[in-house]
Structures are given as C-alpha cells and as structure tokens.
Image 1: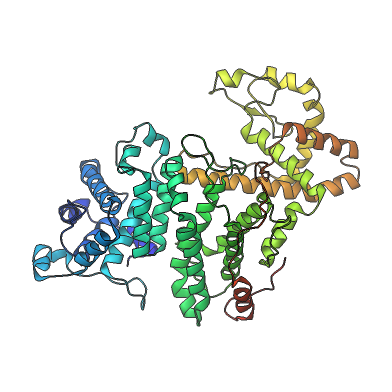
Image 2: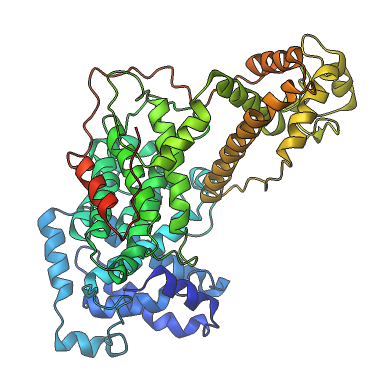
Length: 539
C-alpha cells in the first residue's frame, strides 16, 4: 500500500503536469459510474488511484471540475447503502482479474509496490486505503460552516453531499467497510465524517457503537500487535499503522469531550445530549496508560514525517487520561483502582494534589479568559457587543487584561470591587514569571481550530504550574503579601469562573463500566519486557 510517508515525500518532489493523470481519472470515473456495479478490477483501480492521489493539492482551475467529480464518485462508492452480502459480492467481483480487464486498462494493470516488506495487502484493500486517505484529507480541509451555508465551490458543496441517504445508513456503511478492512485509514475516515457532520450524526454513531468498535477495540488490537512483536525490527515495522490509530483514538475522544464545552455531553441537532462514551471511561484511561508505555520504547519509529510523531502520544494521552479521570470522578467511590503509567499519575498530581493547586488553576484560568475570551476588561462594557470589529488593546502593565477604549481602561482602573489599579501589579508579577502570551491566531479550518484549542489548554496548564510554583516564594519573601494573594484569589473566583474540570450534570454510577479483563496482565508483560522499558505502574 502507499504509506503516508511515501505520499508526502512524493508531493514534495517535482510532479509532472496534472494532465498526465487525466487518463487515470477518466478510467476511475468510468469504472465507478455505477457504485453498486463497479467495472474493472481492484488492481487497475488501485494503480490508477495511486497516481491521482499524489495530486491532491496541485490542481489548476481547468481541472478542478473533473477532480471534484472523482471525489464525489469515490464517496458515492463508499457510502451507497448495501447489504453485507452485496458488499462482499462487490469485493469478490473486483478481486477477480480477467484478460478483458487487462485489455480495458493496460496502463493501470501494473500493480503497486508494498510500502513495508513482509506486510502484504490485497489490491482491494490498498484501493480502499488510498480512497479513505484521499477523502479524509478533503473533509479535514472543509469548513463545516461553509457546508451548512452552501458556500463551498468544490466538492463537498453542502451537507447533503455527505449525507445523501441520511446519517443512519452512512454510519452503517462506515462500520460495514471497517469490518471488511479494519485499518486505521477506515477509522480516520469515520472520524473525518464525525467532525464535518457533527450533531447530525451523533445519534447514529452512538446507536452503531462506533466509539467501541472503531476507536476503543481497534486501538486495543493495534496495541496488542505492538506488544506481540518479538524483535525491535517488528516493532519498527508496525509503528506507522499503530501511530495512525493512536492519533485517531486521541482525536476522537478529544472531539467528544470538547475543550470549550466544559465536559458537557455533545448535543444532537435538537439540543438533547448524546452520551457517546458512557461506560467506556475505564478502558479509555487504561489505553492511555498502554500508549504511554509503548511510546517509551526505543525501538518505536518516531519518524517526524508522520502526521504526528509517536513522541507526542505521551503528552496527549496524559491529558486525555487526566481529563476523563477527574471529569467523570473516577477518583471517587465506586471508582476503580487503576495501575497507570507513572507519567500519567505525576501529571494528574501536579494539577490536583492540593487545595492551593486548585486555587492556582483558577487564577491561571481567570488570566487566560481575560487575555483571550473576554471582549473587554471593563465591567459592563457593551461597545464590543455592538461593534464586533472593535480593536482591543492589552494593558501594558499586566499584559493580560484587554480594553476596547481608553475610557473603559480608565473606568476599570478605579472600578470596584476589583480595581485594576490594585490588580495590575499582581497580574504583572505572575505574567513576568510566566514569560509570554505568544499564541498564533485561530484558523477557521476545523482541524487547525482543534489544534489551536489544544495549545490554548496547554497554555492554561503551563500558566497554572507557573502560578503554583511561584506563589509560595513570592509570599514567603514578602514580594507578594498574603492579603494580595487573597485578593488575587478572590478576583479569580469571581471574575474567572471557568472551571474546565467541572462536570456538574454527571452522576456517579453505582458501578463503573468494566475495563479490560487482562489489563494487569498486559502491564506485567510490558514491565518484564526489554523492548518497552516498562516502569512500574502507580495508582
């Protein structure tokens, strides 16, 4: 199959003119004209599509229409409703190669090289992997708002392009294809659908148990494959597919939890909450722990050409495990006692071990809100609500609070009960210790937006850690009086009520959903293995 690394490297190279692949596109369009009865064979389809895939971002306007026609045809082939029997028959039909097939498409009847020696894939599976990857890239670069408003000029132009037969049939197709070809690329395509369609497909995803089938169970399968590897070379060879699935897993549950939703359940179109992960919390935390153990192996391929390096899995898994463990109150009875990777336990303790730590997080959250979320720092300011384009300027003293006008700044300077005249120097001390508020502007594209939100949350955590570490010596040596600390704490409690670890509507269950039965046994295998440098787990 064509690996992500191969495609990315090929895109960097000088490509021939797009017109050279027009025969491949025309052949694919002809073969997929009737998605229920495709023509040709998997070898020809795979070879043709592998040529076209390299031109994903380098299409001139004269060729945009035929490119979009191909994208629509691939999507229709994947999403048209079929019974299990019809899908199996289609795969069997395309898997057969006849002499007429060779005569009809001689230039595409050449086969493709395998990306990893010793890992063989059928041509049909290779074709589907490339199709899933190509469509996932298209959907990930599509703005959902533009879809809803029908403002896109290229495929997909509207939400109806993605839901031609409704959400239930679409999700049923996704699960069908996964059972036929259980690959990370099939899982990632489902994730791309979820991100673009959002509330329109939440109920369908829940009813089809997609969370467990595609994201929890498949991630566990990939983890088991890595742990079953008996040599460093085997671990290295499995790394890319494993990394792809871990990225799917982490992104999926980050999307469900949401950073701006403060742990509120995702909602369907009518506003009713949709619980898509109830009962899976224990398994998710356990998987995060296993991901951290595997990432510590010196034999895992951490090639930076992957979309996200395996080295970043540890940070992402720690954040996800911490959020779920605390937000769903798994530390309270009857929460399960879990052995977890030490780095997860250490990270959790940094944020939750003491009451003063909690106060520091509130101060950090309040500063973050003033810097990035509040419109204007002055109490009762309405200017920015009537003029969204108003220019905000940051206070040069504290470099935290922003104002839309000099009048608002002067009013807040003397305003009660938290005069900025008093607050400014306190925030300045914290901001100076923190360093800088450097952060790139939010990009409207959904994928980049998710990354920006993630980095913003990381900034809050770093700031909280800074506040936690600097306040005791500041108070101890008199640079920050105890009364000043109490004032800062009171301001944060009243003005920065953004408790992102709160899940007030969550009810602690009588019994938690079970984790993996063999989790402790797997941990023991890791700790005993020389291939994974397993540290002892902590509770």
